[in-house]
Image (cartoon, rainbow, N blue to C red; front, top):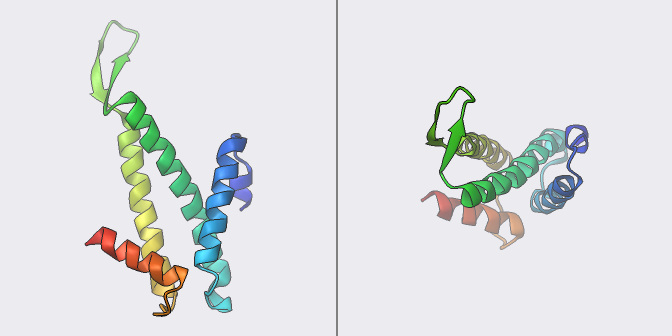
Amino acid sequence: MKKLLNSSDPEKLSRVKLELSRLEEIFKEIDENKRDFVQRHIEQLAWYNVSIADLQANVDRCGTLVTYNNGGGQTGERVNPDIKTLMDYQKACNTIVRTLIQLVPVKVDGGRLAQFLLDLDDENT
């Protein structure tokens, strides 16, 4: 969590900590031998989830095309660079989630983790 604490945006840091708490609750049943590995991944996932929400809000606000002016008299429209970053972050999240799913024993007990995995599976089908 050290890297997350270096954020210059206290509001974002607060949201990341809230998301981290949510994810820690979901993955609390993880085997103790895997805890450190999983903890690092859910810290990254928390940061990515908050950052993705911020990027999505920015794309919604600014649109998919943005105007540019390179200062040399050249102006026009281009694809909002946040879209590429958003797609890259989403790919990273998918990789982290796939890694975590492989490490977590799924119980069919109706718990939060089972529901999370079911919801995730529904989104991907």
